[in-house]
Image (cartoon, rainbow, N blue to C red):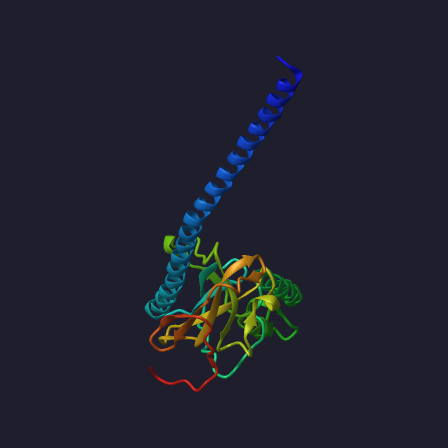
Length: 267
């Protein structure tokens, strides 16, 4: 075989091999594009359906909490963590007056609440140690000890209610995640709206339910999640709005403005 023929075969052989490799790459790219066109819409539909289901379940849970408060004659509150969409239900160990016109700022986190409670208990212990046991003076008059001290009795009442998580299977692992998060929320006891950026990654807010048959007027803005502290503005959010006297909650598509401090009206 002539050297020129060998060179030609090598040339065409190399070209043929390169051509097949390029063809294979083009086929792979085409397959990936096809699969993406099929799978991506299905994934979007799945996440969208799951999100709608979870938002509706939260609305149903609000009604359930309203019923529990009336049935058990106790004050309940729903506790939300904005960044994760987690929420739980708690009840108070004592009567909690309805909120009236008093409006507060940011709700304390569980860590902040515990720290405050521990500090209160430590200070109360100091009062108990100072008061000591009942003793008699020189005239035989009994001097009140810690057990009978009006100061300590009033101090105990001033501590406020103790909140206990509702222990039931239906209230375990309640969450809007992993696709959704709470962007902002405002209930009647809030002076202004509580936003994700303000409360922080571990922060959130409360929604109160009273045994008289009343849930705070409130709205909750729920968005698809982009990352741990950022909402996805490209997808349409939901807004949940409570109906105070009926105990129901409506699910609305998009952002809905609500004045939670408007004059209460019977529904």
